[in-house]
Length: 256
Image 1 (cartoon, helix red, strand yellow):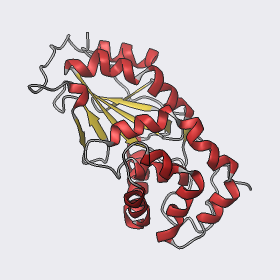
Image 2: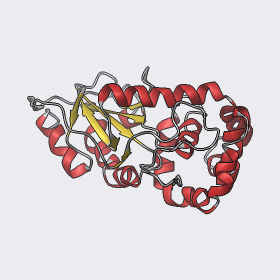
Image 3: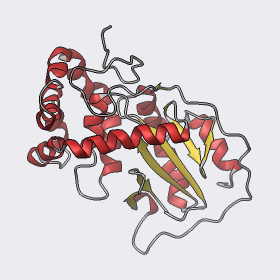
């Protein structure tokens, strides 16, 4: 059976010599699971002033779960988005939902947004590692850049799929470096401040890639995240994959 590398692919066969825990996660783009029971209802919550001289949308930190938290870390309404950097539905939410979420809600301090990766394939794993390769606090912005340019960024992967698969047959410390070369990822990230030498070092660190893949798999299993984008609001999975579905949930929870 041929493995297709499209974002949101649902094939299950591992690529040759792809020995990390995750070759293609048993999940897909735009296929979130059922929501948890119970409705999110709350009284209106007050805005929270950001630190002096800052905007909440510029406050970003890495969480113990490996995500990028944007906004007030103590926000009374906390949104977690599970996304795949290769999923078209996630790119769509990044275009139509994320700006509204940040401008209307995160900026007030009422709501925080944490972006976590669900890995859908080796090309997704490479991108998820590269957005974590820059200075602290840059991962969210780099993720948004990847999503905003997703189609153009992934075209070389599809056009050179045989070479990409051949790269994954190399020894562990070489395979993802070569895969990024084939895909042209180094030039994309260099244009956004991540030097090629640093990027190569990150992708040669097979242990960090394995941790990232395992983290994605473990969280997906524990939280029953079956596809992307999927959202948790105050720890509860909600039935929403678009901004039109998510915003009313936030308002009911008190963001009004």
